[in-house]
Length: 162
Image (spheres, rainbow, N blue to C red):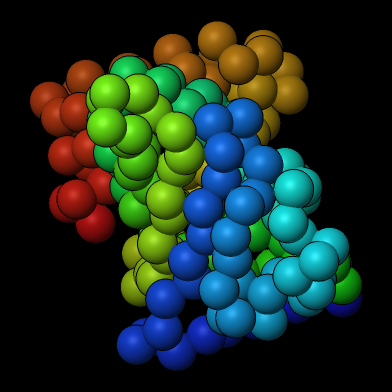
């Protein structure tokens, strides 16, 4: 329990959700990594996999971008049914109907670079989570914005630089 599990560099975890974040499709690797059956996953909120080490600000950024009709990349630590975890670099994009209405979200996740996680993402997320616990979401958001401002880059540019 609470051990890291891995998947191969050449594999992709794929899922679709409705506009409320409920899972409508998941591939075999998603099922395997999550530890849930496909039946247990379908119609559940994607947050069923949310690990307590994940800062809320990352999901706020993700949802803000998606609801604005933009795609996004993010590093995410997911929790398995058994209490273990795995890291992904997620690419999430809105899908549109013929009238340009967002009808679902499509996500493809790959295995991230281990050193990037250990040296950059884990320390950053730990810091953001601590700020959220003590000062709420705004404290975490202000800190992240300040870090990005000092670097002179956007969140997207930061992720792409890693």
